[in-house]
Length: 548
Image (cartoon, rainbow, N blue to C red; front, side, top):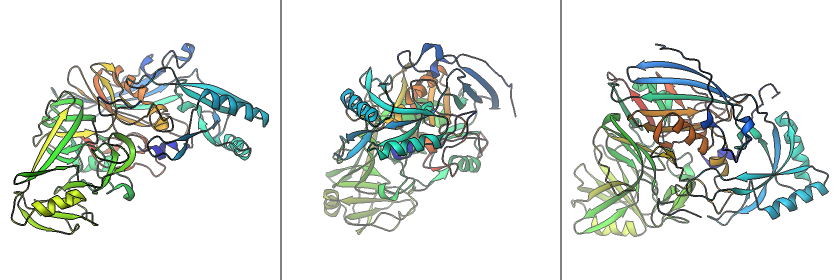
């Protein structure tokens, strides 16, 4: 899920109407049940919504796929709210990260009052709305900023026509559906929840890139090939050639006990130990070092283009060594390791590469390019890393690579062949409490309201994972941006939803157009991309005991 995609206005019609580091905070069908319940966890807090609009109705059906594997499908309605199309006037802003001019959904009181006064002088009737901070653990509380809006329209076309007139009067505008705001409950949310009990389930759960970390495949196609019972999309990945090799992960990924990519700062990860027998969520970092004789050099990436770090978060990266969601940072001195699972042509360009055999012995040193040899690996260096390789990786010598994964307590995470890790951001639930470290994990910036607002603070399709007190894995999706249908969750709503399911630990996985759940190889949710299910990087697959 990327910021640009989320900033696009969804084509949605209303029903019944036409259509940072952890320590651095940056200022066969089973029994079917149909339930009518109150769902307070899906509602805004008292400070954000009218308490009279807090009742919800839900319908759930339950399907048992295997002993210990259950899927629940639900639709949640709020019948006492009415949403419309409206026009938002954008506030001029400057990106704190890049210094570039940009626009924000909310601005200061002075800006809002001045803008409203100028709109009235132009014969428009604006309203000024208070936008409050969600309940994040590491951002301010109370008012985030003021938003200026005009009109309430039954159709998107009417709102677009009004926006054109306002724009012609000299204002920057966007068209918005109020159902994506946190201020009131959503009309409708379509959710799927899978619960896997490792004490009963005889199969396994694994994160997988389906054998090639440099490819993109749909969640359902991987699920069908692997004959999985349930599958969801996994972590963030590269979607543009300008940011690296498409399909490679922009964060920590480990498959069959081997690192396929490195962490970008300390960010949330789903650890699937012993084939899903032991599951936990933790913020993880990675340290990888190459050693040749008595000399060593820090590896900053695995299976990515040297010099390009999607989501930033690596030491020495510019413009920031902290995590920044959907931002590509750069390194001038960069050593990257390529594993046998990198199935694409190796990146070419300035620098040096050393080709290693399975034992780490240097086969050749030369220009960058070619392919990773079967069973071997490749080290590519640019800048100072290229100088280090030239000086230390002589043909016939040996280069050893050491890898360390740690959580925030300093505990080392050891990987065996049946372990996998899928990561994203941010943490949603910690120790049984909603605990969203949105700023530390780089999905919002308290000092720059133009960054991450739509990504985090408005309703979007989401994929979530967690574990309950009994050690059961919870995988959940909510559809969003749907025509005449589901509006999605904010990050806060996602956290509250996971906690309502009993999660004591939970994280946000990739979402937006990537959100997908497959049951027995068939897609069961409604992805938001107009082209259908999106091809993604890695996935989480629940495999029966006889799979493969």
